[in-house]
Structures are given as structure tokens and as C-alpha cells.
Image (cartoon, rainbow, N blue to C red; front, side, top):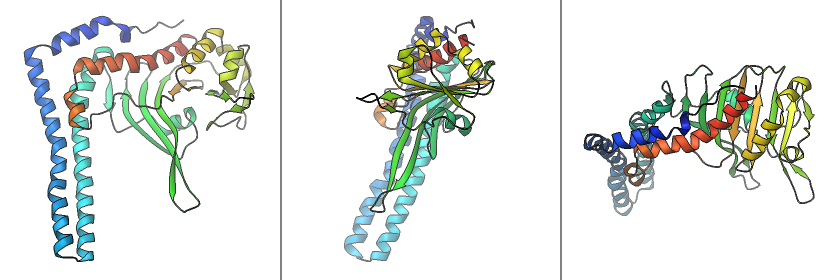
Length: 317
């Protein structure tokens, strides 16, 4: 059995962060950083405070539809440009001054590409089928297993009977992946499923058996009711599906839909939590509530919970 990783459960780390954060010198630095972030967020609204009254004047005095439309288009263009610049600046400050410092307490070599994500080919096999993938908070552990994490929103669009484009959410949650020598021949997909009132199965969004895949069942009835297993090699797949792993997946499934995919060298897990973690602050209230200890608690409680399942899977390989 592989060694467990206790770093997310180390209570001394939080105590150390709280002690450092409580010093007057550190408080002064953090308050200055947050003041700068608040100023950036407030700055983006100045354009609206000037632009909207100007647009109103044009409407009442010029009454020229062409001029008004051009002015409105210009206002929208520059507002979106300013908003993007502000978001990027706020994100960079959040990552550099709050997220990375606490991540380095438990993951010393971690890097964050907040607007990036795990490779699309991995996202596609560990989440329901979708057309578009929008990841964020891409954390690269830079450990020997090349562990990676990201939030993910995946969706597709369609045109309704009235010609309007509709967006349908396919996945909203978290994805973790790492390189583990699994011993598998081919690959295995463990996807969540549910049963209706009359026992009818509902495997929403996930592909059923593909070319070369075989659907298999286990001896665990509860597991079979909540997961479907598709694999390309039954013998090596059944060797991985031991009672401990099945029980662990069922326990996690009680909290949210969980998917596990493996091939010979990589394991990926996804959690359809319907929320994102470690979100960048977007307004004054969220910025002012930022703290190092608060962000560490999110890392410890949220990221740590997701990582634990990945580690438990690894312990069975």
C-alpha cells in the first residue's frame, strides 16, 4: 500500500499561518494589498459613472439614433475591456499574495495558472460529454506524480424552436489527475449512475460502452446501483476493483457524483459538486474578507478532500 499523505491534516500549519498573519507588520502588508485590489475593482465602475450620464444626454439632446448606437457600442466595448483588465489584475494579486503562499505550506513546488486548466483530452474522458470546457484555478503540484487540479464548467448549446440559443450545463465541479503506474491493460471508466422509481437506469451525459469496451459488474450490489464500469481488459480491471476501493467510491458518491478513469499510466477523478473552490474575489466585500488563514482552510478542507480520494485510489494500485 502506498504511503498516505497527511499534509492536508496537519493542524500545526494553520496555527503557524494564523500566528504570522496576526502580527501588525503582516496585517499592514495584507491590508495594503487588499486596498489596492479594492481600488482596482472600484476603478472599473468610473467608466459607467461617466458613460451612462453622457449617453443619457445624447439621447435627450441629439436624438440621433446612429450617434446613440455608436456611443452605446463604444461604452460596452471599453467597459468590457476595463473589466477584463481589472479581473486579470485582481486575479494575479489574489494568486500571488493569498493562494500561492498557503499552497506552498503543503505543496512546496505548486504553481497556479488561474485561467488555465488540465489538458482537454483528460477533461473529456472524466466528465460528461460536452462541447465546450471552461476550466480555472489550474494548480500544478510539480510532484513526482505530476498531480494537477482545476475547477471546470462544461456545457453545450442548442437552438430551441424559436431560434434562440440555449446553454445546457454538463458538468460543474473539480478534476484531479496524476500519473500512477496502474498495471492496467487498456483503460477503465467508472461513471456515476442513478435508478428511477421503477429501477430504470439514468446514466446522464456519460458515454455507454464504446468500441472495444466491456461493461462489467462487481459483487458489491450497492456499488452496482450507483456506478457503471466500462473497461477494455476485464482481468486487469477486476484486480483493481477490490472491496476497499468500491466502498470508498460509494462513500464519496453520497456527497456528489464521482467519476474515475484510469489507463496504464494515469488516474483522473472528477467531482460534480455544482460549485467551484478557491474562487478569485470579484467585489469589495469578498476582497475585504480575504485572509491567509481563510484561504488555507479552503485548501485544507476542500482541495484536501478531493486529493484524499485520488490518494486512496493510488493506495490500491
